[in-house]
Length: 325
View 1 (cartoon, rainbow, N blue to C red):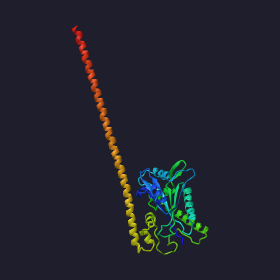
View 2 (view 1 turned 120 degrees about the vertical axis):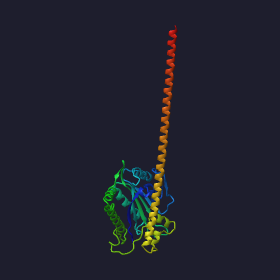
View 3 (view 1 turned 135 degrees about the vertical axis):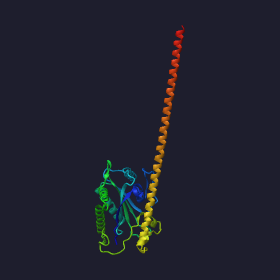
View 4 (view 1 turned 60 degrees about the vertical axis):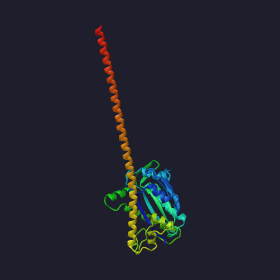
């Protein structure tokens, strides 16, 4: 039975995340972050079936250049640098059909928002649910063209306006994108000759009353691929007895997010300390240069005074000698 999943969430520095780290993990590659100096190396990551950059016409950046440009364009310490789409791919489709479905959706995002998209298609974990084919699509929060990065996308501007008004952020466009993904999945299933269909609507709206499964996410997926049981995987396998288990899992994830924020704050503190040290050194150097300047002026004045006194003595001596004659 085909399953539907489409979550859309920001990649924000405020949560200790970066575009380079997110892209490196999802594509299973090594990327250097020019802003922080960190190297994100996920070349040993397994389970990646396909990766692809979808770029607007005229843009020729590679993955490292692309996400470093996205990071460099943002100055705020809590800036959003990317949007991530987590998508369940119908297990009924072939690898090629799943790849085409994901990249076609990415191309629609590129055309709609004038951004670049980074696509990674992942296979199910070896010991997890073998139907859990999925894709991650990272898009920039700024428009990009051959001339470089521009302003924020319509999605980000709408999101900012709604948040400023105290309303749910980005719901109108996000719901439209979720509906579009469901439509694309159903068309792909129909073309492949399958009867299964998916819906972006809630189970309640569909008249289905059962406990929804929990999306694994990157940490739990990595554990499952290593053959380790994860709490998310156990919940989906029916081992979670009640909502208390899910609440406990949510709390653990909040702790992890807090740790990531603390690491980001520690990096900011170290940067601030280094800047303060450099400023102190510069101030001390300026003081030393000022002392040297004043000392040079004092010596020049002293030399000038001595020369003036010597000239006066010589003049007196000449005057005295003239009087004696």
